[in-house]
Length: 454
Image (cartoon, rainbow, N blue to C red):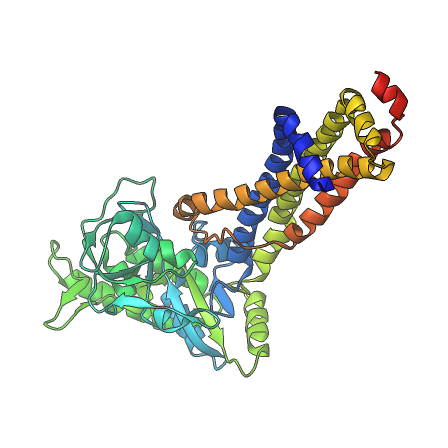
């Protein structure tokens, strides 16, 4: 009979105490695994190039808020930019693609964010090397929409479904009269696109209540283009023409949406439109273009250009990274305390097992055999509990992954391995040796005659 078999039989003799001590180790390891899996998903979602663009252009303000709003749809937008500024960005020789985004509303069911954009958004890669896969047709009509996979799943929508949206966010009760039709559903991307509803940008502008009063638009344009009189004059000319057309129409007419036999279009001038953010791709053969364009915009007062990776890296290292470290340290302390519990359990059992040890010695077991048996017990309890906890942690991650995905939109790989997990078992094995060493030395020094006479 080998040492492990004897150690296992000894553990079975103290089933309850052994189970509880191994359970404490298992719970600590399970908590650590869950922490690593969850933060691994967060790290994957926020540190990857979750958008296939070099820069995000938006109003002056917080670069982190701009990225969280434009890419992750987790923050309200800072402000809006004139649509004319989008055209100005597109004319820059360094820019290959400039895609507008317009935010502001949510779906009536599910409160999913609404994003007005153009078909170019879906023609570009949503992250390097990853293109959208779409089931359905492209947006053609004014009130067509494309929905993310999570929107379709949670709301039970598919191609042909119709829905309404709420003006101004989930807290509002102002439901727009317009009905939007789903023409396509995105395949899962693992990004915020899965939980987003995309509208035709012109359709977004045509929604009642989205168009600002002409006087307000005029004031905003004068402030924005205060240092650029040529563009300001062009914008004001468009506004004046539009004001004249509006004044000539009957008071009860709704002129913004114009229906033609082939397609529905929107007839307000560009000067009346605004965008929330602009996703910019620069020339890939000249990487310095993104840097120079960003620096150029930073000098002015109109807008800013942000690298979408850097603010998130600061967030991860400065806040979430510290939280992860704190939780890992906490679970490590739990595992250490559990190890102390195993030490106390084995050490206290030595006084009850003196006669058993004496009999083993009398039957021919050497001191080193007895020493090895106690160390084997400690190893079985620690490593057995750790293995059970590791499996339970990943099993719980598998069971909870669908719920976490629904609640957060994070794609969780329950079996993803963090580097700390590879260190975990050697550390637990080392702890098993330390925990079992003193009880093993007690067994090693046991006097056979005294043990048999006790």
